[in-house]
Image 1 (tube, rainbow, N blue to C red):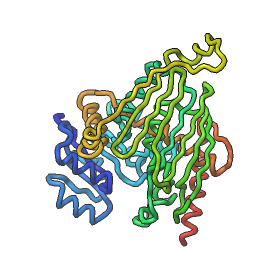
Image 2: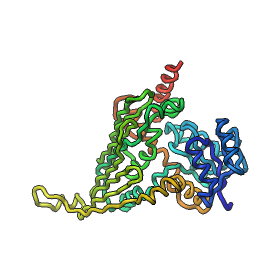
Image 3: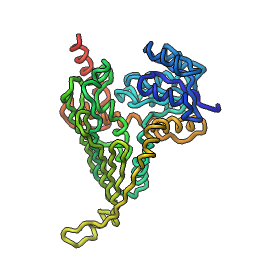
Length: 385
């Protein structure tokens, strides 16, 4: 195999973008050979704009085709696990858009199948893992330099979405269409980074407010509190109705503090590196109210590089290029598909906590969550009749 031949299921917003970039040669190790969509309008667009590309009416025809080696899934969320399972069973490599699915019970079945097929590559489109600031933060955590984490806080409220956004499609802002709101649509990337850096929590308490200043059936204002085995805690705050919004991640640890701030194309990481770990300083200190000495380090990503990384090239291409190399040369994945269940577990636990009004201990009771989700979905559908 000289190049990975990609078939894309779903050519809406993200699938459309992936198709054009593959067709334009943005991945020298991959090429676009097929697409599929249920929309007649999108299929006409594909036939007119995607040269030398087969346009399928049914995704099963695409995944069973000899024209593709790998399938990119860019459909509505509920379909991600099912299409992934069908593609793996057809012997195709699978790269799924986020989220991995709507509920972990479904995703766990996909993960189990992928694990039983080690010759097939299974990835997920967590492009934020390729952000150089998050990569640096991960290196500091993994190396042990940052020390044991005490607290992780993330305020990300720069997802502003007006009512017009939700009005443009019947599937938006619904339990039946999306399977949730800001947690399942906007925040999967950040929930992935949240656990990727701090590890998985042991309990979750959340408050998910539905339709704040918007006529929608799902949450658009969320506060999550997490606790960890080592006694650390976390807070994750998000919304789609605040403006101007904030994107600020803080990690407090024994060896110092990391702060990552993002505002459009401006990104900055500040590392307050303690000269002596706090636990050691505290044990040795004899002064009444000292300030542990630290060295401040600032890392910025340039606007020009961000324009290329986020715009001209796009962070998603980092994942696709890495995926192609994983298929062709066995390169390690930036975002293994099996890890998609972790951030989804946090969002599922947050929903369940808010619905039941109680702390949710992990591992999650997946059947209980599924039953509660179906109650939300059924109530929504009943209200439309």
